[in-house]
Amino acid sequence: MKKVLHYLLFITFLFTILIPFTGIAIHKLSSTLFLILSFVHLIIYSNKLNIKRILLMIMILICFITGILGMIFDLIPIILNIHKGLSILLVFFLAIHIYVYHKKMRI
Image 1 (cartoon, one colour):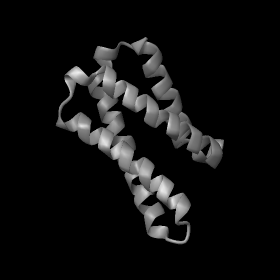
Image 2 (tube, helix red, strand yellow; image 1 turned 90 degrees about the horizontal axis):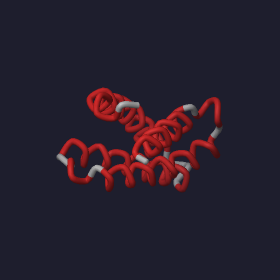
Image 3 (cartoon, one colour; image 1 turned 45 degrees about the vertical axis):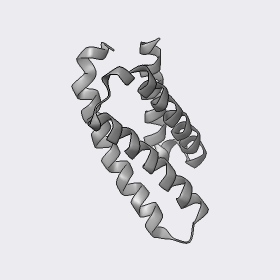
């Protein structure tokens, strides 16, 4: 079950970051599914929580919220700039997270 969750997280993350190829509608759907799967992942591994993992989840949530606010307040470009900056930073932090725990996941 955990392997399926890891694969689903990876697939939804790929669809989320490939906006030029998939389009905005797929980006919105896959980012929502990624957020839900991230919460499931957090619940499954809740016994191993530390401050870095909690901050990573908070960063995912903030990135999601800024994306929603960027859609609502379309005339304020600073919100979308914050969303883009956080998204790029989040990709790096998620890559580090995957690299550190890759041996434990055995994907």
